[in-house]
Image: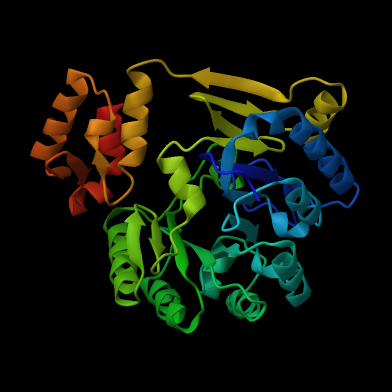
Amino acid sequence: MQTAGEPCSIYFHIPFCTKKCPYCHFYVIPNRSLYHPQLLEALHLEWERQSHLLENKAITSIYFGGGTPILFDGIKDLLEWIPRENDCEITVEANPEDASDSTFFKLREWGVNRLSIGVQSLDDRSLQTLERIHCAEKAKQAIHNAHKAGFQNISIDLMYDLPDQSEEGWRYTLDSLDDLPIQHISLYNLVIEPHTSFYKRQIQPCGGIKSLRLLDAALKKFEKSGFTRYEISAFAKVDRQSRHNIGYWTARPFLGFGPSAYSYWNGERFRNIANLHRYARALKEGQSPIDFTETLSYPANVKELLAVQLRLIEGVDIRTFALPESTMQALTKLQGQGLLEHSAHQWRLTTQGTYFYDTVATEII
């Protein structure tokens, strides 16, 4: 058990994927068995290099992202190295096509207590649009199998705003949720990022009024099904909010391990080399794998933190910030536009503001 201290989190980037999705902009590589020991050795070297920073800290969440970390048996070794709180939230991302009953049972034995499953849709036509290699039935089966293996905290990703997405298919996805043992939903609109396959092919989201109708349908369904919106893109049953992601939105310190992993520590943001071989070689040669660092000075640091924390539906107590007068003026302006509201010192997005968060963030930063 980790000695009580300042809360912090750990992130591991596991880059292996069976197939890279055409909208994915993360660092991923083909899942080849010869890469696994190389990554595990490098992660061990990085852990030895960085673990001293965790002295007198309380590790409250560990997150394995990617990529598809459920493909990596090294998770067992990694968890054996890490002293942590007894109630530490440990999440592993999984894709339905890569999840087997035996894998779910192994994860539970290793101490994993939360899954994030990349469902994206329960409409086969939408899954084909996204070029996913699982079908809707396989996604449902994976969720049920995870629950049978003992997982009581299952999150799924859903995506809307797809090219030519039908409202009928989206309603089918939403109506299917009631039959699934899930406790958390992350909802994303399709964003076409540079350097992705969709970007190169000039694929476009549906956008416009239709996009708003799809979002509104999801918001109504989630509320009816007992999922409370606690962040712009996150919805949870009672006591099932993502502890790890809340840390990102509230500037809890975290260390990232693995190629391309970001960290935020003592006010500094840094990132590892986004290449497994160069990342591993640097560590083997006793060098730092970090290739980017950034420390924001005042007032840019508090502006960014305010903008990020406003993603939380409960809002922000601005007494915790030393805000410059120009930022207070920006808040007042946004209130006048109907995008922010406040009671006493607590500022939050209005319902309209949740639709135009990017405008709010831009105005503040």
